[in-house]
Length: 431
Image (tube, rainbow, N blue to C red; front, top):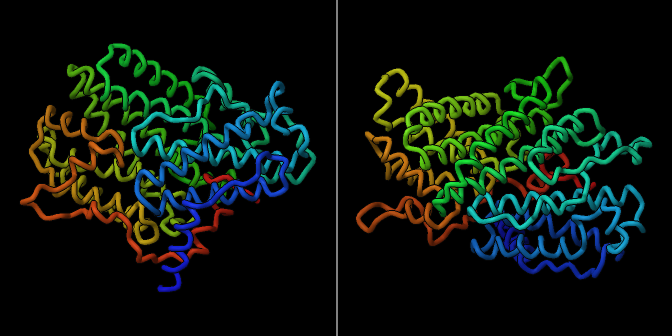
């Protein structure tokens, strides 16, 4: 354990001191430096290495440098030559595409968790989604490339192209849903930071975009069980479950926005919220608990939010059914165990679990509809200042969350396991 702690301290230093010294992508050491920087930023985020500002500063710096290097323009006919992409062979370009999509994912993490605007502009991306590794073994490098659309209206067409193309389907579909999730997170944030009437129109449009997107997903995609007939691998199934949770999260966020913007819909949206929570729970029921070191722990942001929602439903004055309340209590415990499973290996889930425990200690019922809206207004993002301030105990209550020392050093997972990215469908595979 002491040796692991020493290695972890070294990694912490690497995360915050790693420098990309190459000045262009044609430098022989450039790809390795970028791969290393992305892995360390990913690890530092999930292990909470350093202060909140330090962690997000690493990601911010990486994004800006990625734009400077032109990682977002690998497949741009107009701009690829000015960055040197025309000088690389196709296998090398594919490695660089995966680096770009790792940067894209890191930007999403930073934005979603803190309720701050994303830095990556989807409209600026002219880098194709990565190919299926199996397709790369053949002679398919000349296949038609698939790009994310510049507008949300184009997502259904891209989803259909993914189904018929040679891209890494699990990762590509996850990125498509992630694009819509980014828009939903932005609307959720703006609904709490602005009172503009335009937000209601954006909520309605996003609901329509989500409906269209779901209709173009593969027929089995939203089923919470493996596609045994189609020979779905466990890793692909886990990826699909994570994408399902993101689809449900979009509906949760839009519903919460509606509750705040239009009180006449409050009761119906709260009922819809419970239904979606139960769908999310069904996904968790089919989760492989042995996969915690091969599945992105950032999924715990969604699961922690689910636990918060279930707790609010448990204490909602609208729920007087004893059987339902008993079921909610059981399901809260299952969701908490899910977080515990990840918390045994990663600090971020451990911190989120501490926050959930603090929330459940602080909030009890019965809660009126207005109470629920007021409480949900605090939840802008799981690492947002307003939410953490809400959870911070008052002087007369026990300190359930150590907000002064967010970093824990008792790791249970080995460093080797934590860096087993070859089985992680949601982190771009660099090899």
